[in-house]
Image (cartoon, rainbow, N blue to C red; front, top):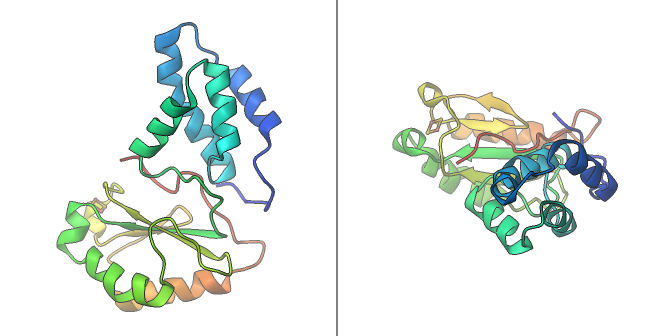
Amino acid sequence: MFKLTGEDIDLNWVRQVMEEHFTPENYQDAQELILPSLQEVQERSGYVSEEAVSVIAAHLDISETRVFGVMTFYNDFRFKKPGNHVLLICNGMACRVVGSQQLINDVIYPRLGLGEKETTPDGQITMQIFPGCLGACDQAPLCMADGTYHAQMDNTKLNNLIDELLADTGDDAAVTASGGAHA
Ligand code: FES
């Protein structure tokens, strides 16, 4: 779990990480290193900025368009700095069957008014609908807040969780990187 500092991504750190861990030996290698490079940056920073994409692309000697393509393919990457808390709503098949879309319609949209990957005006919560599976279908419908599972959610539980996240503005406010699994 990484705590956001409110600062932008340290590009010197990105360059250093790329040098140390993601130096390709050939073109195929470079292609395969795009995803772990992006994951590393989001793990530390909570998102991947355009500038970070430029650094990654330059180091791997591939186009920025290709890197953006990978980011877009894997829905869990964020292009903008998230709020203090990241709330994932699993909307995979098992969760949908037992009401995840209803949670989104009944609680998320009316209460927070957020679209996908948007952040509340106070910077407290970034909401993300996860279209794949968060990997604990037996606990559906499942949410994840800052990397912690919240099982068998209903409207009341989700409202209570949102209350907690909105109230937590202190040192404990933190986000995880990718915020979950990959699609
Ligand atoms: S579909 Fe939601 S945890 Fe598997």
